Image (cartoon, rainbow, N blue to C red; front, side):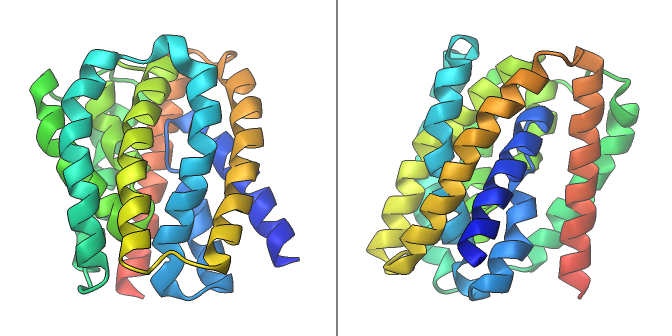
Length: 241
């Protein structure tokens, strides 16, 4: 039953993630944590995400903004390696507090999705962002919504946002999984759990893309802001409980 539940949750999480530009992995965190030790949640969720990404890359290939990827990926690879080393040594729960507050603030920054941008962005900003966000993702397993304000403020919505974000995460994911495996925190049956989530994610991508094509840009922004706000609340609740 646990295998079936993880598979279904992978489908649901990636439908949500496709429609909102990220944040679907937050659905997986408490569920994976219920069945497995909290200490392995991040590696398993990141593995599931990684398996689901090739399907999403194929579906959204023509919308990838490769210039932005070139700025993001090199520092993201470094962030993944550093994050994995910190993961096996350090408790970093306080990061959740900061991220939660930032995500909740986006509802006001974008006026609940009515405003197209909330601050100016330049391409080179994605160099430090790649390092910081990938490091945090390696620690917690789900920070996809954190990057959304930066993509939105670069003018990326719907397919372009999802495609570019997926490409960035795909390349960073290799460093994450390699580091987890090298450090011994991703092994044995954990691969099975991650693969099940990933297979569900592939199906979720297909259904999500079909639904996304029917959404307007404004509806997409509103849903992105909603998911970011909910993600922030979840992080704060988790921090204080």
